[in-house]
Image 1 (cartoon, helix red, strand yellow):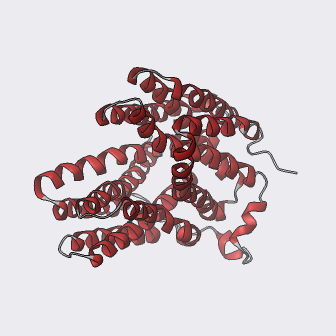
Image 2 (tube, helix red, strand yellow; image 1 turned 135 degrees about the vertical axis):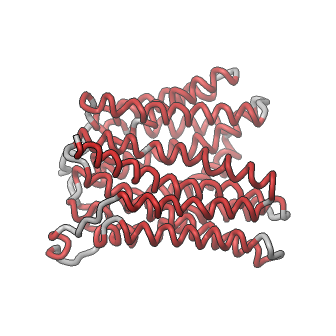
Length: 393
């Protein structure tokens, strides 16, 4: 009983650690573009600012993963918190400077904060996986941990929005600067673990040889197809709603229904983890996503679009714990950080490049065709999910 209570405290500390870093990043990702627009910067400049949140982790992910493999939890999390706090300090400073230096400081703040949140996420996910005793418990842990990003996307933007309206951008960034302190405080409840002996014994090699691990390329391809669905949904729903004449608040409620559904299914998975098989869940989710994407553009009213959003939240929300569990199943313990880095790189590269591609394609063919094309791609890739975790030839 005492052991279960201790494990519960550690899991709560890991969730709180991710909340602190991710909420700060999500708040800045909402507030910095708003500040730039109010200062008269173009939409292209705002796009560049947003891209930096995801572009920097693509470059730094492998280093962050290796750092976590070598040093465990505490040192990488302290570095992640320091990067995030430094980014917020630059954002505060930007409010007192005008002209080009103002925008440069915002870009540096986005780079540092995105890097800090990503490093913290990799470290926390690695530590959570190593705390699990078996595959079922690993699925449960990742389901609980997956609630943190969804909740962070509400806590950060909403809190900073109220503070900005009441006291200005400097006060809003000051609030966000305090959130990583919760990460440092919660780290006290995470036990210090020495690195596995295998780390010192493992011969040096390139991180890219992980791609030769059985099933790794298949898993990353499935993960990319599903992450592309998140990107196209967040990009195309506002366009589709605008084309149908929906108000901004209505579109926001549709996207909120999706987030609510994602959170709900991740709360449910721990209760059903012993009955679930990763390959079956991911394959079914890919087919379900394809069906929802086929129906989404045909929804005539906001209510029907909200139902599609709820259904999509169920299919995409159940995937992340299964992908993470499979990733740790096929990766050596001493290289979990590097494996997580590859997954992070694919997601952040997609989040950087896909909106640019969607923007170009959406201008030509429209949001509905984007839904249908991406839905066809993820549906046709469902056969890959049936062999997740099975060695490749």
